[in-house]
Image (cartoon, rainbow, N blue to C red):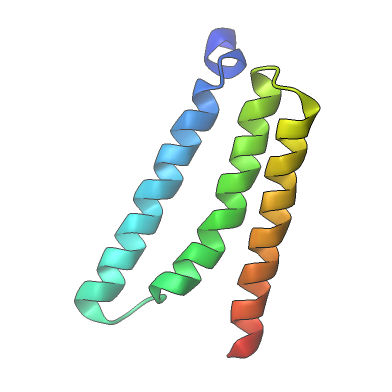
Length: 88
């Protein structure tokens, strides 16, 4: 189990779940017209993806600049999500 975490595969699994969940939400919206529009799904998913990438970088021992870049990306994605929400 330790290898599963230290190799970063746990982060890969979380990323896969995030992508599948986002795709399902977008498809549901496109088919039914209900639920969140694709831009809102993107706004919800992107910060999480960036945070998981930061986690993966830290788990595999990547240099601090990679972790920092992913965290800055998460912050930027969060601001994008806030901007989408405040426009409504």
